[in-house]
Image (cartoon, rainbow, N blue to C red; front, side):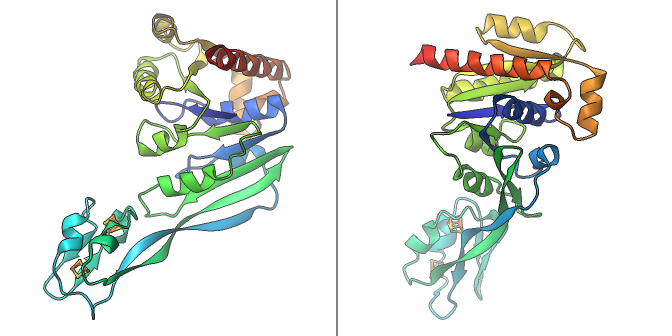
Length: 280
Ligand code: SF4
Ligand code: SF4
């Protein structure tokens, strides 16, 4: 089972939800796909981690074979190649590693080398298997690290994925193949705006979804109305609460100190299972 926790914008409490859900339901795999700013591990406090570098194939030009015909640059949709008068320049950061230039080169002048773009880290902590990715600073393409993290999904386990914020490619890469999407929002006009964009993406992917309203009570009821009109289940409302905020600021998942919330997260998990069973 793959449960993905996402939100239309950052700072809504998506990671808090993912971690508290994992701690409430017991043994599970937690995969932090927010590879530009992973922070699940700051709440789960793992010990030793096993790290692996992620490489992306990137073209290298053999000057002796290249005739400067320009076919590779013409093919590249990402403007990662420039054919000048004296040679071909490769802009590594723009390359999406599609391998197309190597195929179209008539002189067989292009080979590929692995370029390190980030790392995955794997560890066991508090009864959970945690995997998180870290995109190397300066590298713009997060999806390669996300797919490396997602390789750790185990179909016969409960996998909880913490998605990056927003609705761009890294989010779609994370959401794909999920069995259920939990969208975390807050009851404000900004929250509603970003939630509606995230809902559009999830519906396009045809994945069942539910909403968690975090910091309930700070704004209005527009999110509730939106969910009611769109037939979107509100799975849980977490109130704007000083104790929860203080625990978060100390890096403590609130279910550890407020056990009544463990039961609420468990009930939510059972509700998700019921929704999924109803679709089968
Ligand atoms: S397609 Fe091959 S031969 Fe032509 S410019 Fe590119 S690398 Fe050189
Ligand atoms: S591998 Fe694809 S993206 Fe990278 S330079 Fe070649 S054609 Fe462009």
